[in-house]
Image (cartoon, rainbow, N blue to C red; front, top):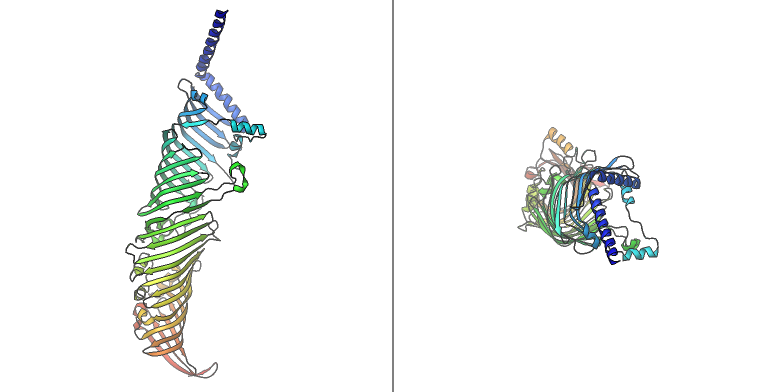
Length: 590
């Protein structure tokens, strides 16, 4: 009896072994593999309600790997959605018995995806894939308890390689030339080469606008390389050491040489430290930063834990060369090669940005600035508003002129600027769409000046007001017979290049084009004290002509004057002096 049982067991084991060997042999035959391939594509097509095709598969149980060739999936409008030329996986099948998925190698080549989302309220053409494989939610308490008790699979991927990956999303293209990652125990080293391109099939925003930079999100063409080290050993936490990242867009003018940072992802938050950003000669170091990523619901689907995007940095320290950003953002800075040292902190969200503890200075400290600022309405240009409050600005004699010479613009009244001596300023400036407003108090060696003026980017005019209580006007304008004056002026200056160019071609000249109306409350001329003077100056660019009136109780003194160069005010011509007595109100006789 015992022998019979042993024989039955022996034959049973032999049969199982034979069946396994037969299955292995059959799986390694092309006919069986093609049959499995047809069955798999039929099941996928039925589940997705879309056409799915696979050219062939290659299964090797001996080497524990699977290769797939020619996968193509159409979307539900029968348009090509995904094509993969070749993909393979090599894994440890025996580890599955221990509830572990150990992947020795995972590779993919020639994957092209065409993702479309026609409008905000229209579904994407790949949404059906997400819906088809989305896990169902447990309905009963028993199903929920079973899900909690169910032991999760432990994944361990040792090597990943990808090449020739192309993803198009509407008008954007992401091309992954190569990606390689390797490691063990959930520690990896990775390298990648990317190319990102967007084309909205419209002219660039700076087309026909030579003074506008090339930055345009509708026309990106950025090539980038990155190298990082990943640590996935902690549950619900991703740690990454971004060893190096560079990015270049030669048309736009973006040339980021280095980005380095240590990044930690925890609970929809990015925690960054030891950040360095280098673009050409500009170098910025940031000790820390926190970025809160948006999510519609919190843990367990709690809608009350809805989270909005936000960020905050520690102290930013660096040296900036404004010339480095000129092509992308401001061609007017193309000659600004003066290095500026800066420190600040930043915070904000998707619609606002705040700058605090802003400190800017030249290396020799001839220029120092302390300020804070805010940007609001970032989502819509109609509501955009940038405001900076300058708590202190000091410019030693000569540095203001040096800064102005960094700009490729016509230099006017530089001599007068030099005569002001050391300058300090406290005030504000604001940018609202195409208008910039500046207001505050300017203290100089020649006296203080209160001003409020704005630049109209649409009409191309500078206009505003200025007033002084005791300005050494004669010292500034090189008119030695004038003493301190108390005055208020209104002005409007033409800054339109087409208009000024046409006037220059017609008349020539070295003067600004515009008009000034001023009231002199009190001043001294050749030691004589004068009050209640009014003057109007109009300049066509070649000649400035004006009239000055002195209003007395019973008389009025007036004369006309003209000049052609603000640097040679001593050569001013005074003509047609006159004197009038006042008999009655609004009744004059010469």
